[in-house]
Image 1: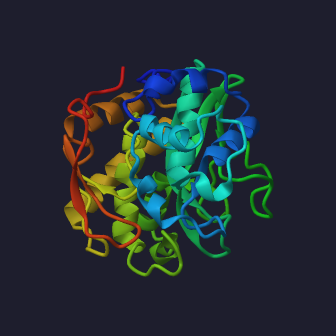
Image 2 (image 1 turned 90 degrees about the horizontal axis):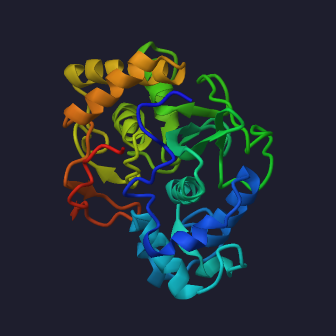
Length: 306
């Protein structure tokens, strides 16, 4: 495994705090671990159930320790012990992934979250999505912890290959941006949901590249956090920003091909460029449409992961 940081070491986001013991005994098998993640976390809008309004702010629990606090306050029991669906912690793909990444790191397995788009939920649409990438059996092994079994367009959810934009699989944000810039895709088919008209298109693709870099290097922010060169939904991307993102995406794609020099350059850029690196604050938007708020990140949240 070649990487500029040690992915077996917790980030500030995946650190379980006082719940370390809960994660230490969890399985590292992707299928078994994903089942535990779904037992703890329920998707806030895709469960098919009416979830308690009083728990709606669960989705803003950015630290794994806080997610586990919420769970243990409601269910003081082992994480694999069954919880009622409607009483699970409300979250999304980022939270299922952070849970698995934290559990894997707690058990000495290098793991990180990968951000991009999934074409396997709705035909013709590509949802922004986060999956797990773990170093298992001598390779980077990718899996989607939200998926309980094979889907027609995702027959192996516990062993996902990165795809190109012509497929219905998982495509990284960098690959999508690069394909958009070369005229090979319609950016209006990539976003949060087909029913959400503003959170899609060029601006959304640009911001997702920034999210992908941050998640790769252990800054697993909320999907509705905004910092650096990100802009307001629907705002046009300047030519300067687009060219900048071209370079970032190029480094991401080369890094995924095993180019150590590219990954070193990308990490150096991440550490030095305020357009990429989260600082001490971020603007937290809301998937419920609540007004954006400035949130304080931990004082050392912009320190590189060691």
